[in-house]
Each structure stands twice: as structure tokens, then as C-alpha cells.
Image (cartoon, rainbow, N blue to C red; front, side):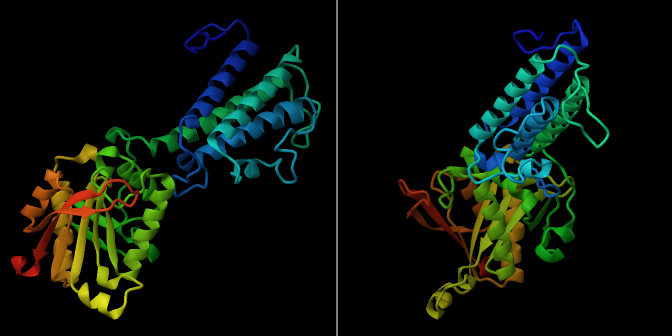
Length: 379
């Protein structure tokens, strides 16, 4: 048997012990992958090429346990929730229901594994034949079921590991997919602003996990007033959708900042055009005419490399030359000295200091300094 730290026997006494230990190892890996995750993360579709979610995978593995040990080996009726019409299906078992949560799915999988172990204890031999036929050819034996469940659980543990990589903060673990400029805009139309080291490009749904990493970072969130108190994966998806809608509507240019040689996500550089926002009357549009509001955020692991200044300089040039804006405004917190230095280097000047800005999440007002750049300074 495995030792107190979960290490497998290097010399298992027999085939049964070896198979059961290996299966238990992968069962624990699968549960551990989601046990400490927020539901918004566990239920999120983290990769664009698949609908799989981390919670859905573990739920599917619970179904597989009951299918092979209860339904096939013992020939028993499938237990809840698989006894509902249409539920005893591999694809359906991967789908999440409205009442699902991380604790419920972990419990579902744990109970299914306990039932499987109880079924195993009823069998004296690996040659025990299942009571229900499979594949239209005949019944499998217990040996086949154990090998199959090791294969099934290990394969999905690999999927869970890949999805977990999307959430890890360490730069060495980032997925570095080269940018396809034509694909970084809805409908295949490209808006890509280039600098010597960076590409500023439209956000896509596959950037959701990176947006979550950025704005869930306490170091980043403390400087921003327009974020929810607890930024979630759901908020990240809303952010991407709003960014795409703003680009299409022409009232906001919220662009991802990527390293041009690798595609690694660095942060966000954004320009909001209040006069073009929907819902304004003519007077409000006239008052905001020619104004652009600049914002930016960089992942903490990329701080100190000049990416904020480089990306903002490019967006500022786009705002003044291509969009023909006359005034740009930015409002960093009073104690955010690095952002103030970025703005001063770009030619902004301090217009107001100590302005109160009420956080979206409530609580004490942020004190911000208002910086302004007139177009004539770069003409």
C-alpha cells in the first residue's frame, strides 16, 4: 500500500494492489485539481478549442466510476444523479447543472469512488466477470475495468493539469501562443498597434484567464476604482465582451498588450471616448467632444520593464493622430507614483490633485490626481 505521504509501492505485492493504488492516485489528483477553486474558475471554459471545464471533468469521472463499478460490474441501477432521464451519458455527465458547486462535485466524486471500492471488495479475483455486457460483445472482467478506469482518470487528470496551467501566475508557466493578427478582432478584421517590443490588439474570449489573473491581483486591483470588490472569471468574460463591444461601437479601445516575439500577455491599455458612448444626449456629447480617457494595467511580473509607457505612448499617438482627439485625461491614485511618472514622460500635466473617486465596489473614496494632455503638446 502507499505510505503516509501518498507514495506508491515500488514493489507492489500483486497485480490487484498495483492497479488499485494507481487508480486511487489519479482519483486524488482529479479531486485536488478543483478542491480549492472558486466556482467561477472551476466552471469556466478556459480554452477556446474545447467546452470542457474543470468541474465538468470531475463530474464526468464520478459518472464513469458508477457506470463501470455499479452499472456494469454489479449490474445495479445507476445511483443519483445518473438515474434521471438522459443523465446516464458520457457527454451529459460532463455538463454542469444550475445547482452544481465545487463542494457538491467533489462530494459526488468521493461518494462514487467509495461505492467503487465497496464493489471491488465484493470480488475475490480480478477475473470476476461483470454482470452486464459491454460493447455488444460480452462482459468485461474486473481487471479490464480497473485498467480502463486508470486510463480514463489519468487522461482527464492531464486535461485538468492543462486547464490549471491557464490559471498559474508564474511567467514560466504561461501559454505562449503566437498572435495571429487577423484573429484578434471580431469577424477577422484586425486592429493591431505595434511598438518595438509589443503588440496592442483586440481581446478575444481565450484571453479571459489572463484578464482574471490581471484584475484579481491585489497589487493591480488596489489602484483601480472601476473593479468589483472580488474580481471573478465571470467578470473577466464580461470584460472581454465589453471590450469587443466598445471596439465595434467605436466608443472604447480596450486592447490587450502582448509581447510581439512570443504572444505572452502583459496587460491592458485602454482609451475611452465618452462622447461616443451610447445613451448620451446632444449636450453631453458636445461637452465630451474630443476627449479621451486613458487607462492601463500591467501584470506585476512585468513591472519595471517599461511596458506601460511603451504601450501607452502608442495608444496616445493613435488617439491624437488617427482618432483626432484634442484632449486626453488619466486619473491614477495619488500614491501611484509609477503611473504618474509614465504620464509625465508622455507629456501629461497635473490638472487637479486629490480628486475623490468612488470605487465601484463601494467603500472609502479613492483620491486620484487628474492629468491632462492637450494635442498641441505633440504637434
